[in-house]
Image 1: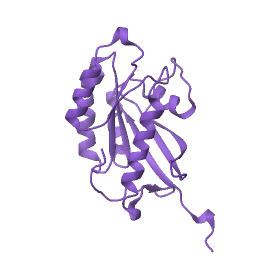
Image 2: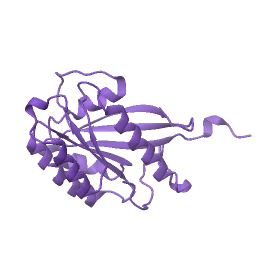
Image 3: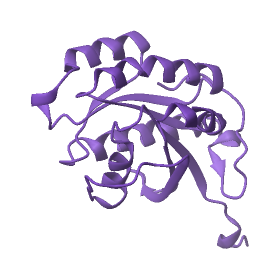
Image 4: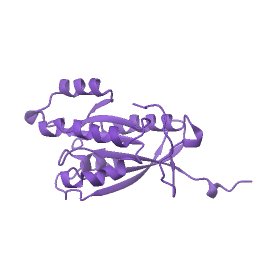
Length: 201
C-alpha cells in the first residue's frame, strides 16, 4: 500500500511581469489575502507567495506566484526566472501609457525565454481610476488580439476581476500541463522545467 506522504504535490509557477508601479504587488496581495495597501515598499528583485488552489474536480494544486521588480536594472533577474514559469501575467497600468507600451518589451523576453506551452495573459490594472486613464479598454483589446493572449481588466484596489483572471489562468495551466501526465507541472523539491508542448494561450 502506498503511503500518502510519498505523493508529491504539483507545483505551478506564475510570474507577474510589467514595468515599475503598475500594481503587481497589490495585484498579488489582493489575490493571496484579499487586502490592499496603497503604500508599500517597491519590490526589490524577486518575491513570491504560495497558495493552495482547489480545482473544480476537487483536486488541490500549489501555486507559486512570483512578484518581479519592474525597474530596468532588475530585468536581468526576471529573465532568469521566466524559463521555469508555467504561467505569466503581463500587467500594465491604464493611467500610465508608457507601461502599456513597455508590454512589447516583456513579450519579446517571453518569446525568447519560455516554452510554447506556457500560458500568458494580458492584464490592465487600475480600472478604478478612469479619470486618469491614458490607455483605453479598446487599446487593450486591440493588443490582446494582436498578440493572441487573453485580456483581463482589473482593479487591485477595488478587488475587481483579480480572482477571476487568476482562476482562468490556473485552469488553463493545469489543463495544458496535465495533458501530458509525465510532464504535468513541476514537483515540489524538483523545479526543473520539463519539456515543451503546444502553446496554451
